[in-house]
Amino acid sequence: MTVQPPQAAGGGGAGTDDTFALPGARDDAPTYDPPGPLAPPSPLPPSFPPAPPVSPTASAASAPSAPSSPFTPSATTTSSTPTTSPGSPTNRFLAKAALVTIALSIAGALLGLGRDQALAHLFGADSATDAFLVAWTLPEFAATLLIEDGLAFVLVPAFSMAVARRAQGAIGDPVRALVAATLPRLTLAVTAVAALLIAGAPYLVEALAPGLPDPRLAVDCTRLTATCVFTFGLARYCSAALRAHRRFVAPAVIYVAYNTGIITAMFVLGGRWGVRSAALGVAVGGALMVVAQAPSLWRQLRRHEVAVDEVAVDGAAVDGAAVDGAAVAQTRSMDLTLISTVLLFALCRQSQVLIERFLASSLPAGAISHLNYAQKVAQMPMVLSLMLCTVTFPVVAQAMAEGDTERARVRVERDLALVSCTVLLGTAAVVACAPQIIQLLFQRGAFTAQDTAATAAVMRVYAVGLLGHTLVGALVRSYFSSGRPTWYPLFAMTAGIVATSWIGALAVGSWGVCGIAAANAGGITLSALLLLCGMGRRSVPIRTRRVVAELGKPVRAALVAGAVGAFCASRAHSPLVGLVLGGTVVTVVFAVLAWALGVQALAPVLRSLKRRLPHVRFR
Image 1 (cartoon, rainbow, N blue to C red):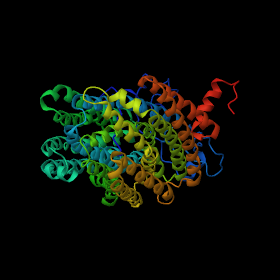
Image 2: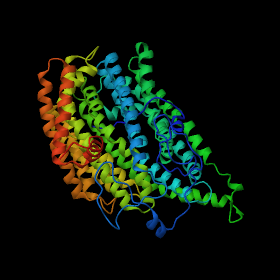
Image 3: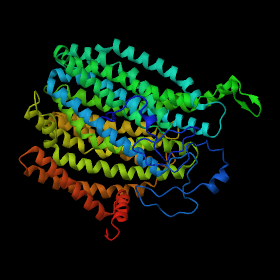
Image 4: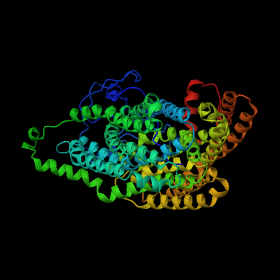
């Protein structure tokens, strides 16, 4: 399975984040965003002046202890208790940001499912959809390299460092200096790559899927989808800058715009253009992703604008050389080695798609489509669980930039506990109710009952690797959060890709598409184990043994819940009843077993229930 872009987003458009300022985040700007309708009344004054520079000694003595985790019980420590820097967000802010992002992700996920349903309904699962899905490889790669993993691991730490330097009173505006130094280069690079892909589309299709019966259709679709390299690069740049400023809504709406463009194009032009209309929708949707964020980013930059030639430092005007020096300082964190390690890791991870499409191209027509539909549904628990890491990644990056490894460690351990528990609950539900889910979502129009059975079988095998995919997505953020190059994640991912290739080549002959899915699960699990074992001086120094022991608890709960839920779902004659019954049983069994095993991710839920039900005993 490849990591798809989270189908995040909700309504709103450009500038939505400026009407919803999450409380609890200390913004370094001397301005105030009025809280939106979801924000409770804030007791803080209507302006937040930038925190003055504080010496390390004074900071350590005066900074309050980090509030107890919303995910795990806080350990009582003395000198090792993490401190909260003046500009660090509170747990309340992070919880609100995560909830808002997840809510928008669910809305976007529904649009993503609507997009896949429209594709299945209008074009079914045949050689035409196989040709489009070969072209769809480019948006998948571009999303991983530019939006989700690759470029994000470079830009988010760089912007977080720039924001931290601005809060400390650096000369000029480090954020504007970073934009001036990097945005023109990025624009030129993604434009050149997109043009190269458009020109070399025939050779790319031949390399990706040599067994396609109609490569010309795939070439046409590939030339249209290649434009996403340009639009995704700019969209990721805007998202990184906004998230470093604690603005999460506008970056979350990009996939609403993206999926809306694809769905509209398919229904409007599908009758004349066929599956090419979906490829055109990719081009239009990519442009809408940039349009949804650009005005909000422009307002953030203008809000912190500093007229360099009018600013005085100790009575002397700041000259252009000082500003150039700030730009150089910021671009050091984005040197060629760092960019190379990040992009090579993301490219290696996404190469699973190439292996799957290559192996499936020799199977009967519709095999690639079955793999695609199974991936889209099976990855939903992973996408939703990783939304927390999307919110906390700038926090970890800022803590590492300030040298506060203890605060970063606590944050990463809490994230791993919660995302693992979330994805395992979703995995159990996917395994238990796979036939019912696929039948309800796709079995209509050109999508037959045979397609449902094949897709459900593949989805159950894919689900085995969901924990591995989630751990890789969470752990790799820690490796790159410091803004320093490291080759270990590339090594771990390469080992997983080699395992995927060998297992897939050996299994595809006997098991078909299920063998390809099993190879994916095995390879990504190996990469996750290597990344977990390598945490330490290469990354945020988490307590690996404690984390592994904690992961074992929800794994056991998910195994039992999935088996019981599958049995109950199979007894129902209606797919809707089976889905409701199986999902309910999985949730109840998982929650009971997790509580009995003492899963720490449930601690905040129990504390909340105790506050509301003080006379009930939970243990």
